[in-house]
Structure formats: C-alpha cells, structure tokens
Image (cartoon, rainbow, N blue to C red; front, side, top):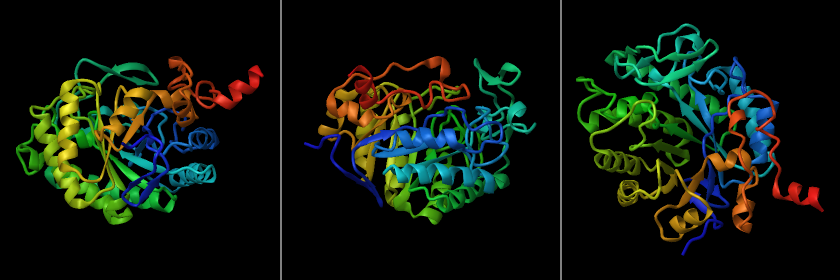
Length: 362
C-alpha cells in the first residue's frame, strides 16, 4: 500500500511526497500581471508540497478573467515568474506553470478592450464576471475561424518557451473549468461543424495540439493536463464524460506525458469515481485527483491505488505547511474567504505554520 508521503516520479519530475498544491488564482499580480515579491513569499512558503501548480497563468495580454492574475506572455511577466521559481527552488520545492487562456470567460473591460474569443459564439449564461466597474454579464464571444486556431496554439508554445527560460520544472495545460481549451473539448460549448468540432476526436484536437506544442518545448515527460469533465463551472456540460475521459486519457498516454490531473466536483460521488477508474485504465502516467479530499480520504485514495497523488486547493490557501499538518494529523487553519482575491499580504502570506503557532503558545 502506497502512502501520501512516499516519493513519486511523475515523468521526469520527482515529487518527494504525493500532496500537490492546486493552481489557485489569488489576484496578487496587479493590473500588469507581473509576479512580484509578495507572490515569491507565498509560493516559497508552500514549497514542501510534492509539486506546486502555479495559478492559472495568462498566455496572452488580452486573455484576462481575474483582473490581477499572473501572465507569462512577455519578457517582464516571465522575469517576474523567474523570481517566484527561484524562491521556490531555494526553499527546496518544485513548481510547474499552469498555462491558461480563459476564452469566453474573459471580458473586454479587463482585457484591453478585446472581445473574448471561443470555440462558440454563445456567451456564458446565468452568471456575471467581476470587473473594475462591478459585476457584469459575460459578453458574447467571437467564434474563432478554423484558420485562426493555430495562432492560439502558438500562444501556448511561446508561453512554454518563456516558462522554460524562467526555470519552471514543468507545465500543466489547463483544459478544465470552462476556459478556452475546455470550450473546444466539451460539446456543451463546442457547437462547431468544422475539423475542431463534432465528434470527440475533433473536439479534443485543440487540447492535444496544445499538448504537442508545449511538449516540443519541455519534453512530454514534464507536461501535465488538467480536465474537469463533470464540472458545470462557466456554464459547461458534456453529453458523455466517460467517452471524453477515455479518449483524452488514451491520447495523452500515447504521448507519454507526465501526469493527468482529473478535477472532481466531489471525489466521493459514484460518477466521479467511475471517471477516475476510466482514467486509470487508459493512462499509465501519474494520475492526480483533486476535489473534496480531506486528509483521510486522500490517504485512502492513494493507498488503494485510485490515485498516485492528491491535489489540494482550498486547504493550501490557509495552510502553507499542509504536508506537515497532514503528516501529524494536525488541524487546518480556517480560511478567510473575504481575502481570496484582495490585494496585499492579509489572507495571503500571513497564515501561521504549525511551528509558528506552537511557538506563540509556548
């Protein structure tokens, strides 16, 4: 039986334990999207994770959905990330960049006036996006022409080149949660009839082309992919999640990528467990599961072979030393949800470690 604290080799990336820090958008990079000293501290504090996945990182200057997320689309943003990577490495950690384009989840008011783009011409319904002018309805996106799609694949390749120069240990391609790649992948958004739409082989073509482009920079053994087949976030749905997972897992396995990050809505739900089983059947690399795990369910999932590692998100907001807390069975710090996306150190770098908390009561 494997436990959470055993090393894991994910492709060419060695993880000293199987607790992975999820990509967590925290909106601390400012309107210029340049990672800064505060972000260096935040990520370095969490370096004991087996692997850190960076916040969703913009591959283009006009691909903004959170106002102050980090980018990696020019020399300045890449240099900012180099400082973060160096700080994580100095603290003994490993970090992969999560490359991301929001597609129709962007908004012109925070993307330099650019109209959002997507696989479809339909807007996200029944929700709003936070902007400097308050909550606004999502805009109708411009449907990308077939001849335009390769240029968006190239954005990911160029971002990967900058990420490699910045020293990242690997890349996670964000194919989940209703963002651009997912808008091609799932048929609840993709209503195309050309070579980028229709059957799953066509809908997955964009994701796989991005993976191939990024793997050409980093090597497939330093590339991972996140998908979320049952998440309805950003107005998403798919007619056959099991078929989607089977096809994507087979194709990624054929490419020899390092890891597949399957994002659950609720890891205990039977439908989610079935998708994990399908992924395990078809993918021989490291399988990462995340969504609704606590310390005990994470230990059980790794011990019974359902996952190779567990991705923790919300718990990492308030617990920079999460690995030690899980190891010792210690309680987690409560998270101040009001500071998730606010600027400054409060609720970002000021959560105490166990050692700090114990010292303060000694």
